[in-house]
Length: 498
Image 1 (cartoon, rainbow, N blue to C red):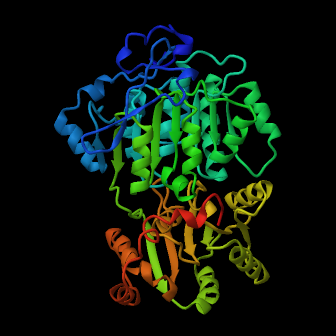
Image 2 (image 1 turned 45 degrees about the horizontal axis):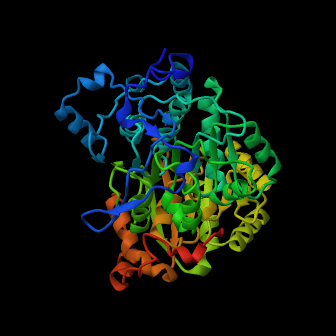
């Protein structure tokens, strides 16, 4: 039996690890005060825990193989896998799934999924998460971060008392979009079903009834978008009194979409001694500032660099053309690359998305579109057709740019250049996932010139060729002003979809 299987073993077996045990309860809502550190920043004060029920959150036991690693070996391994760490008492990375000590049923699911070894973020993130400390994880899309927090979440749930009638979830995962939330829930169901851990997905755009029923029956894991979760809380369909493991996935994207007030409201209803895992692909100041409000003495793990950069497995081709040349260029490109592989085409607007899709279909191309104005049922159907290969061309707005995990997307085409370099990196990150190769084509016009210099930096960092036309544009234009470059002006999409 795994050392984490506390539901089937001695429930008191972890009670000696008081240093990282958590204490808290519903009465502690919002009670976490703050103090100024030496730099003038606010840092959370340890909450008043008198008389509150303890819960377990430190489950990590270092395996003999990991314990035997010397400091030099640890340093070499981190350097090899581009892992940078910050914090005190940092655990050594694990090199194999067995080293983590996951329960057998979790290891079986990992084996079924065909994974050969932990990804860099998993290698370092799992020991950190299992120690019960707050964690900041910065890694590019497709890095395996979802399992980095879900598998420790399953261990965490299995160590807590069973849900009673009226209890809310133990684990809460906040995500920016419906699509990402659904994908996270699919993984939670796959890896949690063996230990009878129930999960549900709470998001807008669909009837509330089935979601309300799930919550009323009791679920250990809730994956939610912020707006619908607040609706459920205000209508007394759930509560966050039992939440001891909080995940903010794609925190940068949530801030970009204007969810800052909703996140703060939700977190104010969660016990202050919870374990919080804060995931982001980039580390702009807005994301860093929010982390200081919610995290206490966190570990920080960065895979690669926290600077904006593209996956090196993706071949990037940027064509400088005029707006009027775009459609003909798209058709010619499809004629060259169409081989039955999945092709994802990004546009800036819902209207443009529908227009190009209509034109492609009139010209005989098997294209469908997805964007925020589509009903959830239609979006699910389009994704199903795209995943199955029945419709290998999908046009999309940025609603699909992050979090969507569609295997074997061979090509990404940026028909319209996005409103930020950050979104560019995440759009092209839909290909080249899980070790595969991919190609991203981008149509770049004079209207996008303000992004030329930073785009060139991204291309050069990834070892890509820069065309003479783009180089010339980069030399003759200034970089975008704040709010238009690496981090989009949040006012441009507050609470809405593109």
